[in-house]
Image 1: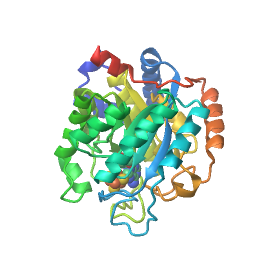
Image 2: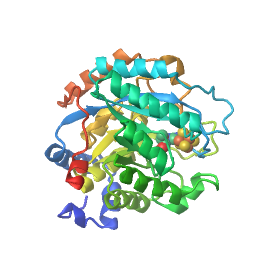
Image 3: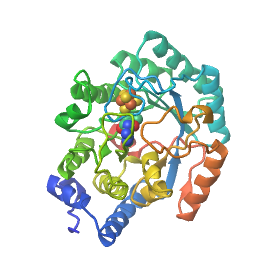
Image 4: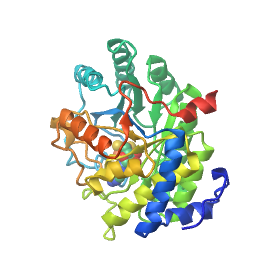
Length: 354
Ligand code: 5AD
Ligand code: SF4
């Protein structure tokens, strides 16, 4: 393990790659402990919850790694009705989640844009403005981003997937553009959102220096929130990799969280479901490596299996109140607390807009 350079801003690309290479139990424990100290100092040992509502699995895109890509004809496509979404938003309030994430495949037809705008307004009205709304609805025009922001959404997640245009090109069809996606992050910030992005790690062809570049990309693009996770194979996608090793994937996912925390300090970092897919306690381990956000799934059980981005998605038959109870117990076990009914915004956003 290399000694940590000071201050964190002076981490070089090589320093970051060396930290990401932590492999032995001793190296990893030291890395996670250092990240946990930084987390406690900058965002506290407090878990921020966002109830996740997967509103539609219809997607116009065809990313080579994703189970709900448009070319996968084996998927049963669904869209929740507005009444169902409002019901789930009330459920989030009952659970004191404080904020929700509306996520779907990418769609940009006018009826969809109008429907989302109206749904955001209704969620704000039904909760008396109490519920925070994060959107994760893909690439859209600046005008659409502005309309949804004015309707009441205040955070947006759009993973860049990788900061390397070359690697991006190897994972997507030719009509998917890394530069268009990167431009969307600027449009989101211009519209006033707190901006979240992220990458997958352990992708075929990805190096530790690529991941180091991802972290520098987050630092240099005014990113407030990060959602990263290991790439996991899906059997009905073209990106299947015989060399996939779940233990290595979990370790790399945790290392990325820890090094992101050391470098970026006051951003929100999600401990993602992909970690839980690799180990039953994967999300708690993510918290202990420096993450501070968990997104418990509120989607109806009847549709969970239809929103399968990768094989072995966890929680397919776990009811939302069981999820909540298990999560609360797990959080208590690791000595952290919850912040009921709070939006849990990223301190980084407050600092950069002060
Ligand atoms: N493994 C891990 N993450 C995936 N995503 C999509 N497919 C996979 C996969 N096979 C992630 C992408 C996308 C987010 C919604 O889910 O990063 O942005
Ligand atoms: Fe669609 Fe997102 Fe899957 Fe790509 S990763 S196919 S945009 S849902």
